[in-house]
Length: 270
View 1 (spheres, rainbow, N blue to C red):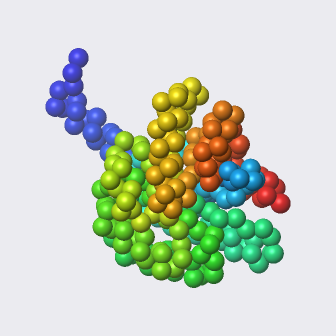
View 2: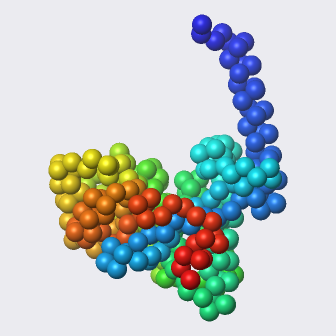
View 3: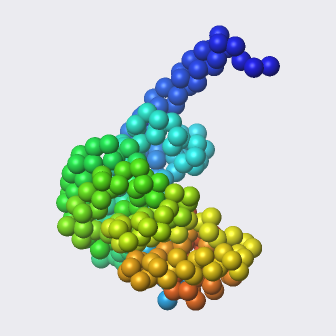
């Protein structure tokens, strides 16, 4: 039976209250540092060794339960609180790099995701990030900021403004989820991105010959435009062999490693 207007309003109010309650819990948990950064290694296509890592986030709640991003990011994006979480992640990642640098330990480039909400006030975002970089004295070669292709398509001027600003700081920018459904080959000649991360939907357990041809042509175009190529969602030996043969610069996926806690990552790269 369809909901009448009264039922709909009741449903809306309940969800709104639940959303506000989740938001309150989130803010309290952020203050208690319940959110933890995780690392998923990316593997060099040439050496087959760990070359860099993507920084991800998990919510380890006070009751010990581990929440994945799908459980909390939607409400944070809706309320705008995702901004605070991004800065939290950046600072945690920068502090990790700074601590290892001070201890004389091995450093690796880290990829950090940029939420679409930041492009509503891009100058505030770039200023805040630069302040954090300067605070922790992070060398630019260890930072890559990832922006999804969808975000780029909807915020072209703001994204390009950000890229130009970070290029002045010698910081690289990656287009995440390339080919996720919004791409146009025409954009390849104009994009300012240094790196392109192929959407995992291009890869599958039954990678067909036609699928391989499409990837080969995309790789050819990207290489000729001097883009660094990363493939995520790599899960089988067949994928690995094909991508290495085609010249993929870095590979990321469960075939190699799942996202892991900081301690396990540090043991891995020791």
